[in-house]
Image 1 (tube, rainbow, N blue to C red):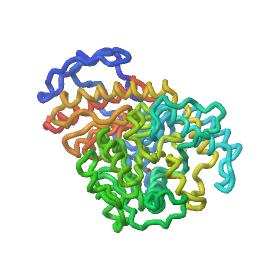
Image 2: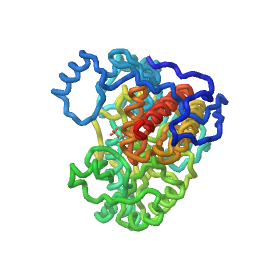
Image 3: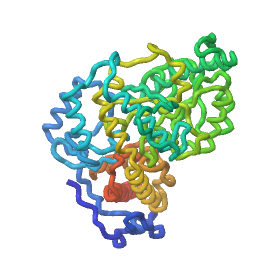
Image 4: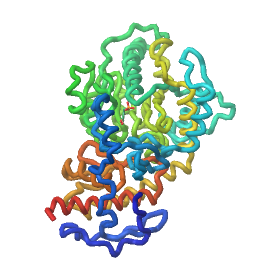
Length: 502
Ligand SMILES: Cc1ncc(COP(=O)(O)O)c(C=O)c1O
């Protein structure tokens, strides 16, 4: 078990090594008004969960599994067996504070009682019945996602505009949902919809009000623009939109028609997005790429250009959406002239039960006909009922306020670190809510910090651009956030001494 973080202010802590003796002002953290001092936490200098201490039964098991498992993941030598909230426990009952959240998936934490109850109940009723027949939950989930988007803001609806539809008919329309099984599949679907929209909707546009669906399709409008350092998934279409060499190069040639552009380069938009463009896909906050936010001005310019050329604007909110930023959608807090035509989602939607979805405006849904797209598992009653429960909870104003409050606490603690560790930390934290990244000066520092923290019982992730990533469960408490940064500070002290040769 981890030692508990002491509550008192850290005025008595050991001074950091010579390069760290910079004085910084005391910061006061809302909402608990705790103060923390200008010295790094030294409570976790001694490792408690050494990677190399692998019990023999674990070694044997991992060896047996390795012999039959395709080796695509670099994993440390322990086996996670259970979890509760933001804690996970290995097969020898060692506790870890999980600040990785299953890579931004376990929004309600591990082994959530509400999720467990629903899973058990639905498993006894109906798990799967194909998409040949209606089920009780898929339509209800679609209704809830549409309604919450209208209420809380997003997809062209300003926050606070719509009130819940009393008779539950949602017959004002406007938005439609298609269910998938993962993030990459949500994006595959969105890419297909862009292509069909480009072929048919632009033909209709040019035919000046011709009857829906009868104008001859154009084959010209097929290009898809996406952004360097973005990540959209590993299937061939989504990979073709993922302009990172390490992911694309081994699998070339990719799908033709994809065009790279640079995030936040407003001047570059017109050259990339042309009359040939059927769609643009962008993460409002690039996750894998390094927690890099698209600016409001950039998204507004992108929206404007998509309207000019008749292209669809798709936001991939698979990592940053569904409450993670403290608003329901990451783009929901922005003015409507920055909103997209389509949002793709997945990760937290059912708290770890595989599901994804594509939320689109009616103008997109109108070009998709029966038989155009489909999936065996998407929208089945087990995952959609769980997702209905998850969306109900994460869209509650008090839940979103919690994410914002804990996120800003974590952010303010991380903000101190560039001053405390100027040789290691490259700058202030990036991101908002509980999708945060701390940039480092060298990639090996990132890898070392992730390991040093793990060896002190805290799981964090790395991501592109030399960054340590914090995407915990959205139920993370302030106390857990405090512990995370305390351990990070001890890890930074350790690394600073290592790199000074002490
Ligand atoms: C922004 C974004 N899009 C798409 C994906 C792919 O999702 P999945 O792994 O569920 O296919 C990810 C996964 O990390 C992601 O972060």
